[in-house]
Length: 327
Image (cartoon, rainbow, N blue to C red; front, side, top):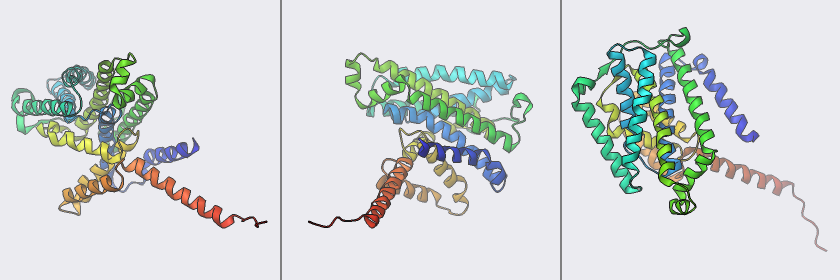
């Protein structure tokens, strides 16, 4: 237990003090991006990691939340109404998403979610009266909850950090609950779970709803951070990118998606300033992860650390050991 608490405490302290030691506002904004993309990846991990359902259309739910927030603000509603409406509309969209996609699993599920994502992209591109087409939707201003203006990068970072920590706590509670155990059971042995009396479809449905809740929170933060959204928000590349975050960091782990989000965002926003072909570098990193750490960065690092620690312990015991004389 101490081996887990100490690293978590150190990580929390570093994140809480980050605005005071990070060099410049730009990197603070990058940290905010990492956190809300981490929330998005955590939502995808509920399905891809714990349910074994690889979704290639999750950007559709992300786009529904983003465009709903932007549309409500554009027609004159305040920030609380826009946020609540975004949660409500996206919950309805997630229910439809689940009903349509959960008719099958495996390759069929991947193809259905891909089709739903493409439909959402087409609507965002062609429904000009709502989405403004390829020109996108621009917003002005961020909310000021409890009198704290989120226009400040530091205030926005701490807001994003709070949402991230709540998401981590919610997922940790969910995974350790009977519902989470049942969800992992449907991933490993769906037929056996069905034979034991579990409603596999209902378990996966509520997991999709929970995933949609986290996706909505990430999308709202994305909208207020960029104050702009376009059809690229719901494109296939957006779904594939967040899925790669989950796979790179470690699917079915709590902090793996956050590590994967940090990797992708840093390469896109920081490394790309120094390397022109940063896409090639990112692809090479993913290939290296698949070859050397197929379970992901977080489980792979833990495995290597334990292997190194055990080898050191064996060396020390061999050096200090005393062989008994033979009779």
